[in-house]
Length: 115
Length: 111
Image (cartoon, rainbow over all chains, first blue to last red; front, side, top):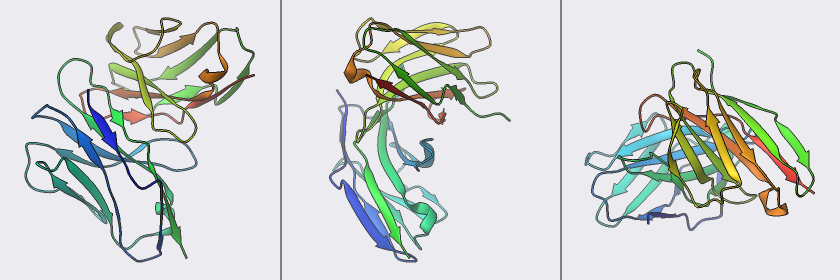
């Protein structure tokens, strides 16, 4: 069974600075997808960034980028130029193609951006 | 383009009762998944429907059941509610895999 581990329950960062959230996962699959989702107080899960395991290049979306280390089964999220609106819960998630396309989530990291 | 909408937003039920939660998928999406998110935890997969058929289920008892309708809207039904069923229930829809749109959830409290 696939598992996703986020070892940082809470983190804080000053506005405009950079923060990195950690995620490790366990799977025997070779082809899969990894995601970072943001859940603000509004409760809606918002996709931040997605990485396909077969792509060696790390995904980037504006201020958000990942460090994907397939051999180490590590998938960290870097947020540059942190903004107050980045304050939220962040969940790392795993998905393997074929069958039901369920997402397996970690327990989340609560990020607070301080002014 | 209308996103995923869920109703109701909040609900309080008594232990032993039954509850139905509803989800309208994003326009054009034919796959819907339901997740349970307990307080302080990540979402846990309940089940998934594709074109009105269940095509995957997580580790939840049979008293959790669902339906998907021809217009791809969906229901989650929970019978014989227990206190541990108190959680945020999230619905997500997709047309193709790995591009899921989530609703804002229904907060269920069982007393």
